[in-house]
Length: 149
Image (cartoon, rainbow, N blue to C red; front, side):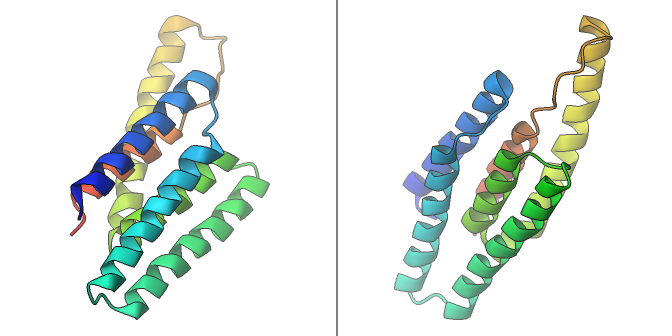
């Protein structure tokens, strides 16, 4: 993995987390940039003789995640920015890293939700803001980025 791509991905994940906390939105430009990094990773692997079927698996899984996420968004279970960020993250991490990424996001999301509930109870029990789940996605993406081959 090229250090420049890794650093850029970590910066994008941090940017996504910060904007989700501050304005509860994940800008499309962040997601697009992460998607471009994913395609760059796939392209660089193909240039050094990586398998075409692996590249197709990475792209296909990211597409499937996007479709499943769109269904969950339609059912109001996930935010649109979260859906796009997860799909771009899967494209970046590839099919091999997708399951550990999803597991990391689930664990980080659980911890985030628990801390968020405590914060609401301490700050104002009547306050019911939305959970910035992009933080959990970004943490899972960062963890996955450092465990990539």
